[in-house]
Length: 302
Image 1 (cartoon, rainbow, N blue to C red):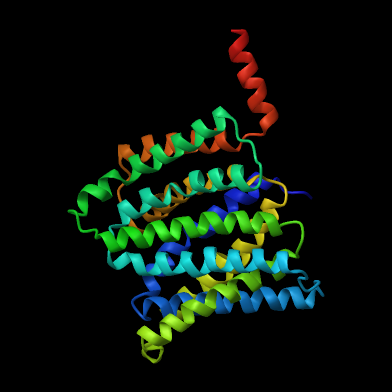
Image 2 (tube, helix red, strand yellow):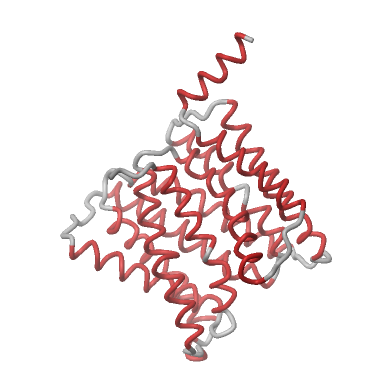
């Protein structure tokens, strides 16, 4: 059975959205960068092990290794550094708004470097998605009391840009290297600078290997990272970056829903209104170009 790439993209967002509560749980038991490094190292070990068992071909050529390195430094290195470190310096609501710009940045890069064509309705969908996420995050931004710092904003922008660049690199690798091998290697490369920083600035020996931390680490590394990255490269084999990245707008919707379901967090009118805008944005930005052209043509006729 062939699964639609849009369904795979939505599944990846569910897996990534589940990472936020797991990160929150695990940070009580381990330093930030040490936790991030362990997540990447464990996930890359699983993926490379799977690729080896499947006898996947080792990447060849400077171009392929260049894209793997760029993906590792962008998605894992810069992305994880900003994601794990910014929590101390920027409010979650503002971070959510800034992170929602990632699909727009990725789409611009995809147009420039991959010659993708999104169309006016697709761009409108991306803007609508950003607006929807901003509406969801407004109460959290206002509740933060201005507790964000310029350094925190820089970290979030770095992480967001790193993920966008990483998406371009993964798309370039999607049909050239086995998904498990490519994602395992990019995680390994990205884990190197994070591990160096962790040893230089933290005390990895202070980890509390409690059952809660082990559950958090395994949940992040296995379904939240190894499986999610593997499915993401499979998704990008048949879906444009600009369309696939739009599904990121679903992450805050899923996150708030999980919070309401398991932690009794309130679901406000902002959530329902913003969620509707974000969902429409995902639909418009990710729809097949043939459908978009038909829609534009129908509007002209009327």
